[in-house]
Image 1 (cartoon, rainbow, N blue to C red):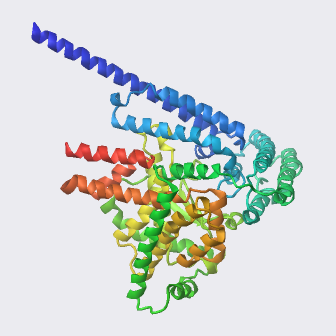
Image 2: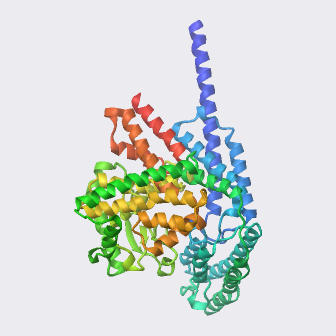
Image 3: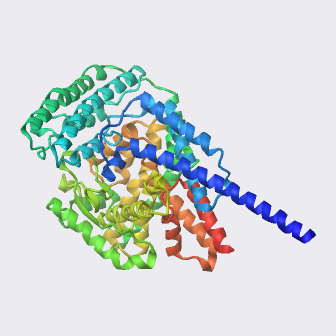
Length: 567
């Protein structure tokens, strides 16, 4: 009888735990789906990717930011009812990621006034342009909806002006040097008639063509012209104020973009030490080439050597694909997971090349199923190709194309995780991949290795100058001087990149190296923890198999992987 009673007590306890586990898991699944549906509705990027109808555009306003924060606060309150002890590991990761995502939205709301809605990298205009460029126009009804969206574009531009006027009253202004980039950037979108990037030749019906042209010429174009006129006149007459809370904002951005609990001071010191070590490695390569001059003289030689200078934009693309072909046979040795989506390279739209230093990776979409790296094909004399290998391994295989598509193709993940992204994870993985390519033997001569090291130095210097300008009050000239002393980039590239760090998307550039440092550290931790059970393919599968996550969550995940393997 006692034995039967003990068994009954055990079964009741087990069923209670199981019921609680199901309750927590079910609740989290419901909250995650609510969050995902909200993202699917609000994210223009997601609607483009999935070919969903686009009837609205983002709102670059404080009111919209408050609505987002209120939604995320509500999600956080619901997540408090989930007991971490009652869910499995993958569900736990979803819980941690959701909490981090929503907490960041709430925490950054007080600093909304500091974020720029009109600088090239931070602006939504490039995504909006893509929405119009990929808009389906097979029927007259489609064309009617297209014209209706054009009218909303005019409203969006008006909201941009309202927001920056409010920021200006708060003493938050874009520096004149950045305006020299912003104004041409905005002008590209604000042209009239058929010159407008929003004019579509796919519209066939005469009355709809006239209405599209009318909206562009009488609503969209004037809205852009009014905004640009304001920036050129009243805006520039105002004087920015030094605001103590701006440093608090930057500290919050450091935590947001690195997804780690680190300070600007710590990042700055990490950068200085990493720059020193890279300088030593680069000198070692120069010595191996028997070069007896200075670093500056060697860099000048590299930048002017005809064998490294592309003659046409197409030559850049072919060089990138050449390195891609080289790595393919080695992939199975290092990776057990490969994405299904194909990949390629293509030239960036020349209209956008002036405001972007390099290019960007575009994930596959319903309209274009290939993952594509769009490279900058302008100013060929300033684009020596000795670092092309490092670039393509960062952007395509095993970098962005691998990570982003393995994530989006993984149907075992909740939808919000398949499409999520964190700077330190996404860019950290891509930079880790460029370094991994050296381990895989992809840099086959000293010049290719030196090209890899210059690319790494480019990202490492960011840790110093981004924190320097935004936290330690470095004048921009001091930052550019530090960049010139350590980088091969042209004066034009240093000019635009330094503006990106201080005026466009402060803190974002820290994620690349800080993320890659963390992944490398976690790889070493896994080696130490697993000893003879360690396998690099399994480590890469562990990092990529659960999608993007904050580095704080990734560390917990890797600790779980180690503990599970030890059992």
